[in-house]
Amino acid sequence: MKITKHSAVTIHYKLSNQQGELIESSFEAEPMLYLHGSENIIPGLETALEGKTVGDKLDVEVEAEQGYGPYHDGLKQEVPVAAFGDIQDIVPGMRFIAETEMGQRPVQVTEVKDDSIVVDGNHPLAGQTLHFNVEVVEVREASADEVAHGHIHAPGSSCGHDHGEHETCGEEKPGCDGKGGCGCGCH
Image (cartoon, rainbow, N blue to C red; front, side, top):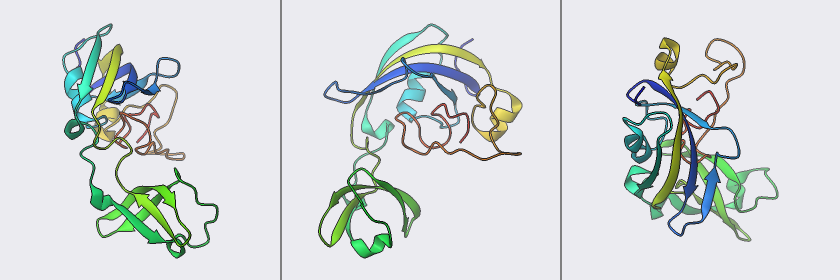
């Protein structure tokens, strides 16, 4: 079966940056599951996988515009320590949800100064060309529920739409745009 819109796809991947440094690999862990054509993964990778079949291996270079977008200097700002309320021991790398004029946005602490903290609202991989080594592990037709929910339901898990606690994968994992394409089985 070829990968087309509404295919349930399982892949293994290695992600490297422009310098060839490995960022992440699923080959030693669980493969990534996603619903093709539902914007569960970055556009450049999804486009490259269109029409592929089980066993296909491919090297994909994804420019920033088809990945996590360009880097926007305006999304990096210095805020007073007081804006963090009672939170103590703030260190670079910590992530928070900030209220902005565009609604809630994830930000990452990049620098801690005496009276202020520098946060960056760009995705950590924004502005970068990404290199993927991908192997297609499984392709099947998505169920009606998966298509309706817009994501794949991992075997043996509940997506939480009808019951249970709802997991969120967020935008932490490369290849995932926060809508469920990171193999968490839910969005």
